[in-house]
Length: 179
Image 1 (cartoon, rainbow, N blue to C red):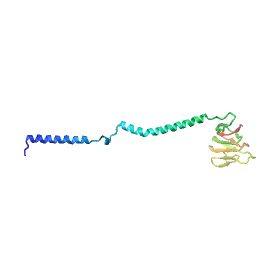
Image 2 (cartoon, one colour):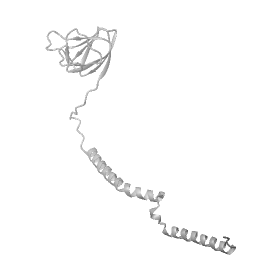
Image 3 (cartoon, rainbow, N blue to C red):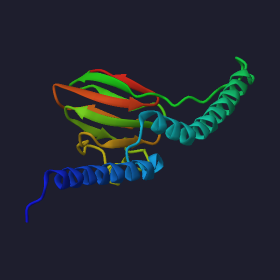
Image 4 (cartoon, rainbow, N blue to C red):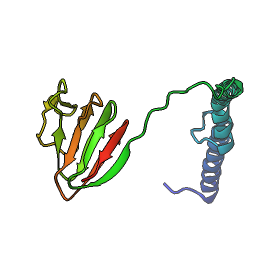
């Protein structure tokens, strides 16, 4: 079956018209709101609406804390006659062999380097207390390095350096008897 030129032209035109009709219906049916692609301006606007309330809450908290801080700054400071307790700092001593470090009152001592032995007079009640091991150190016993030692009273208790030199950390009142 031979088609004439005229029939072919009609069929091609009909096919083209059908393609244009389908495309027109598809374009008209397209809804931009269902587009999965998000624009940058939309994203910024969405994030801004989520973040703005949180920023405002944080700014209110900061303002309240600044007010409290200012109120604390404006409170009265103690007069010079009032004593403010201050935590004493540790002092590092570099002592030589034969030196005796005695507690004048309650002291914390730590032997950091070198060697030393406990000095406890026979009239003293009790010995030195080793915080680290939870034991007592009697007169003449070695003081372990890096152990926190409590000398409870200033009744002649202390430590005697037996190495050529030693480094001692001490907190509290003390005296040094050099050889």
